[in-house]
Each structure stands twice: as structure tokens, then as C-alpha cells.
Image 1 (cartoon, rainbow over the protein chains, first blue to last red):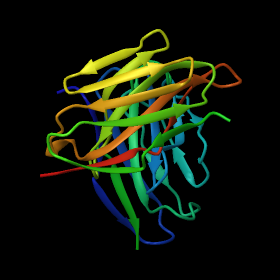
Image 2 (spheres, rainbow over the protein chains, first blue to last red):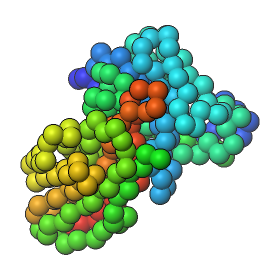
Image 3 (cartoon, helix red, strand yellow):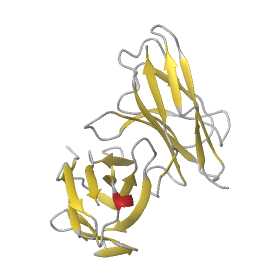
Image 4 (cartoon, rainbow over the protein chains, first blue to last red):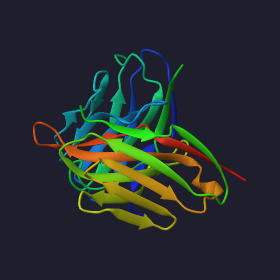
Length: 113
Length: 115
């Protein structure tokens, strides 16, 4: 089936540890995005990538890092520098950057313990 | 500042009733507007997408309207079902000062349908 897959669905991390969230898509989309969702707030853009080997910071990039070595994959690393990492993380993709429809993964809930 | 505001924040209705959710935006220039449905703990799923030239778009029991002059959109749900219980997010695509596109998300309306 075509789609966008995030893993794992739930993730627990100890303070001070880095953790990587996976996002894979087989929709042949050029653009991919990472968003953070907190209660009572709209989705906030962390990073986005328009093409392979290129990515741009979003509105809240501090404490996060990404890579885009393959068109299908856009992993997000939450580093120990992120002060409040507990949140619901959503990955999305689209044919062209932020103008065509975005398709979302099912999300990863990260909890720092 | 480009913003998308949704109302109400939350809504409770009885099964079978209709409801209308509102979205006001100040995004300019405007490219298109989407409504997404997000079940708790899941990713958003697209319901409708409209460009500035479209006034209405339907998807089953969901009907979205758009008034580009007043920068208002609404999502009407007809004959609600328990499965409609979710958050509904309005997303506007506009261009930034550098000419790139950007999705701007509303905070959503949380709908609860009761039996």
C-alpha cells in the first residue's frame, strides 16, 4: 500500500539521551516535513526537506536534527539539547513544498522519563 | 502575521445532528485551504481542499465553504455519527515574504458526538 509510515508509535527516552524517529514514504513525494503537536496548539514545523540532500529549519528547529539521504526517508533526531521533548511528532510528505496536499503519518508519541 | 483561527475550540453534539465549524484566516497571499480530520493519537487525514476560486467542496457528509473575500471557511457535518468524534484542523497554504509556500495550521476544533 502507498503511504507514509512512522515508527515507533510510542517512544520513551531518558533525559540526556538522543533518540531518532523514523519516517518513510513510498508516495514518490519530493517534500517531507516534521511537525510537533502539543495540546491546545496548532502543528509547529520543525524541519522540512524539498529534495534529497537538502533540508531547511522550520519554526522550532532548536534541539532537533534531520537528514535526507534518500527520497523515501526523513528521520528526525531529538537531541538532549531539546528542553521539552515530550510531544506528539508528525511526519508528512507532499509532491511540492507546502502547496499541494500533505499526507501525514500516524505519529510518534515521545515521552521523556 | 499570518494566522488561522478556529472556532469553537470544542463542541459536543448528539448523534444525527448537524454542526458547523469555523475557520478565519489572515494569510496573504493565499493559495489554498484544507480541512483535516484527526482522530486522537493518529495523524490528520485530508477531508477537502479548496483554492481561492472555489466556494464549496463536498466529501460525503462533509461540506466545506470558502469566502476568499472575508477570509472565512466553514466545515459543515451533516447527520453526525459517533465516528465523527475527532479534531478538525483548518490549514491554509500561503506564501512567505521570500516567495516560498508555507502551511499554517489552526489549533483545531475538538468535536464529540454522543449517542
